[in-house]
Image (cartoon, helix red, strand yellow):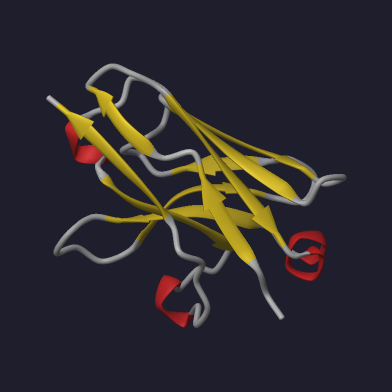
Length: 118
């Protein structure tokens, strides 16, 4: 059974930083590229950052240069360092395996709320 537990969210002022963590079950973490997704109120869930098994990364244009994704394969844990946060980064953040089509993912953890005040 897939288990995904996100943590580290909170309320921060614009320009601030947060570090999110994701604890994932071994099966999904070992075999797959992983990604961080987010969903803002009234918007579709979108992928913001991806990290492959060997550490290669990719970012959405909206977060490039501000967010850094990383993973610790020994701990089955993934991170998202978010700097220079903007109000438009406000969303619930989720981790999961990488999928090209986000809608094809059927299981999600509870997510962690990130709120950026202006």
